[in-house]
Image (cartoon, rainbow, N blue to C red):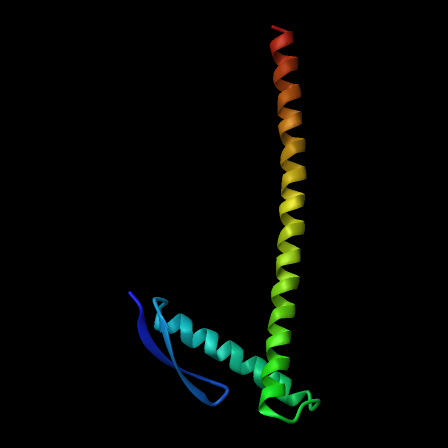
Length: 99
């Protein structure tokens, strides 16, 4: 069930319609606020919009890097799983042939 949850993001009050828990939304708001502050401290931007966009770009970069890491990890797990299955298959055939 969607309800309105009020959070503060970088000093702006927002009412968000969501089914997520309030604590989760507050955690997200704190995360975004920290990214906005990080962008603001970089000193490269002057407008609020520029700071927000830079923070969004930084968050997107983190997301894309994590997705790539996840893809690589899945590939590694798949390769290792296939090796294990081949090993077990060979061991099963060897044991069934020696009986």
